Length: 200
Image (cartoon, rainbow, N blue to C red; front, side, top):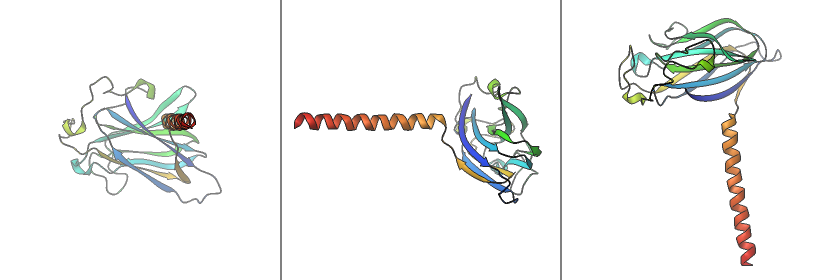
């Protein structure tokens, strides 16, 4: 399974305004089997939480599947998954997807965006997705079931019904890359200093 993680923190406190915020995330999927992951945390219980796409645009872009997962001691558990729900917000068209939750308890969550019909195959994220064992096909070359070929790769997904501030949190891989880059810069600086000391 090719996951493209994006980490977020949604901070919810009683001191914040009771007015719900909406958070918007956009990007592109490269291949038919890519799965975008967006993490968020609720510090308090939330009501009327909605996650939806409005990027299908009647076939300009790929037909998305969205899912929401909750974190437990054993991993990520499926809370809900949807292919077609264009009735959540204005701007959605027939194959857009989305989920609504009357209540979500405080905790860590993520939602995933995949192409139809790359369904989650079980009740846990670790079980993967339908297309995991297939060779990756660039979205520009793929003929999507129930859609067509030559679709756009753009997704636009929204999270609403939560109060607070959202800030991006680098993934562990990003920290590793940053540390590796700093290590290389440090090594080059030490090498340059040694050469300067030898020349003197």
